[in-house]
Amino acid sequence: MHVLVAGSHGQVGQHVTRLLAESDHEVRGMVRDDDQQSDIEALGAEPVVADLTDDVTHAVEGADAIVFAAGSGGGDVWGVDRDGAINIIEEAEQQDADRFVMLSSINADSPDESPEELREYLEAKAEADEHLRESDLTYTIVRPGALTDDEGTGRIRTGADLDRKDAEIPREDVAETLVTALPMESTHGHTFEVLSGDDPIAEALENPRRQP
Ligand SMILES: NC(=O)c1ccc[n+]([C@@H]2O[C@H](COP(=O)([O-])OP(=O)(O)OC[C@H]3O[C@@H](n4cnc5c(N)ncnc54)[C@H](OP(=O)(O)O)[C@@H]3O)[C@@H](O)[C@H]2O)c1
Image (cartoon, rainbow, N blue to C red):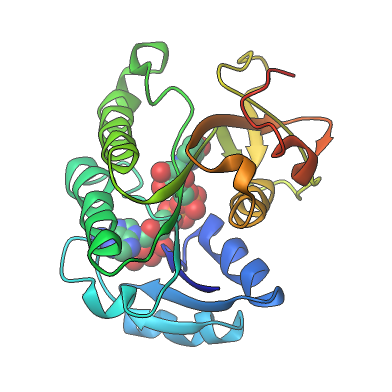
């Protein structure tokens, strides 16, 4: 598969790019900054310079699938997390890049359960997710808890509405979840939460909305 990674130079995005490049996929890593291109090449991918808030036609060209790992970091949540995501979803529809794996967030559908400073971000993510669900694309929406820089364990729990106790997960495990979900039909058309857990990632993704 030809896979475009949006947010390829981000912390999750770099793990995603490396894992895809180590597999059988042809990988293109999207960055905003020219200077980040060599890092993407070092991860084994072809860099492309594009901004989600601008024209992304050339970035999507030839892609079969998109993994969306970009994010505003709490900055321009409406411009990047909502409208930037919608921009590339619509471009994927235009160009028949049918498969779309979205990195979303736990509590996107229940912002009131999160601290005040996260609420607009979560509302923006929820609107982007809804747009993806209503698109023609074959989507998977992955909603992790708080991301950590701990080493990945390869073990997760997934479900429609997980217990929030210890609601964390290493970025490396989130990246592996996104990459493993990409070819798995069992994740098609599903939105699910993911946290650190006991099940090997591929096993958990066989029935991702089942409560552990
Ligand atoms: N932090 C958490 O606990 C948490 C929990 C659940 C979900 N998430 C989601 O996970 C995402 C990834 O996390 P992370 O730690 O990997 O974030 P990160 O390191 O900040 O990576 C975000 C990437 O998005 C890129 N980006 C931002 N605006 C863009 C634009 N307009 N066009 C193209 N690329 C753009 C950034 O590029 P630049 O280098 O150019 O800025 C960066 O490479 C977050 O954005 C968030 O939506 C986070």
